[in-house]
Length: 253
Ligand code: 13P
Image (cartoon, rainbow, N blue to C red; front, side, top):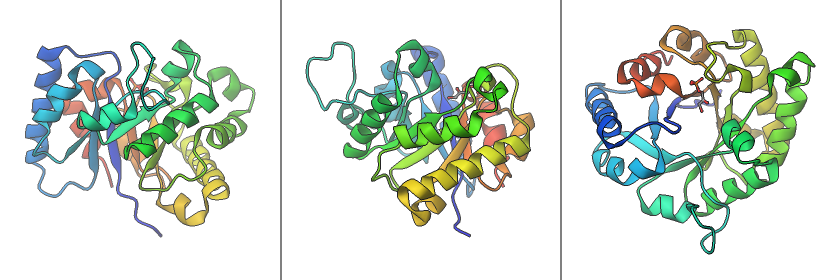
């Protein structure tokens, strides 16, 4: 079986001013320096305003830096937006695209998300493409159909494991303290990998990291991260406390 190195990713969302944001980044850098041979990759995705400052803080650290969104265009008349090239220039390695909060707050559909992922890949960033069903879709038994449709619609057709990560985040599990059962998570992840295999080929599918996101905490991380098709986590609330974030990271098998 292909070994996929776990990725522990923190999505800070719209949290962090220079005081607490830099303090958190520094605590993570210090914490990571104490881990002798981490069994995982660590990524943090602060808000745009902190990216430049945190890039400098992470300079010699093993922690990777990402943003939470990018525009699909290379440059131009898009007031308030940030291009993938700008993120790469600012020191990012990754960018999250298609988070459910972007899909909801900004009306992003699969085609927009795919265009953003293509832009990210084109700027040599790794795109973290987010998908996941709403509570109504789960209750209607549509979860597998929804995530497969989102994979087809949001993941660029020439993606490879080196430039793409997929994050499964059930919308109803985000920030709620609720999660699917471990069996349900594994079932969805296995289906996602199968769908990626159909889209991109079995070799790419076997190499691609699939993250689980939605109320991941130190207390449930060990079981979730042990699932065969879960290759890390995309963590919101618990990524804002260094101790909790490391608690999750240290739960990697
Ligand atoms: P929580 O970990 O706060 O549930 O957020 C998950 C998420 O949306 C990460 O992108």
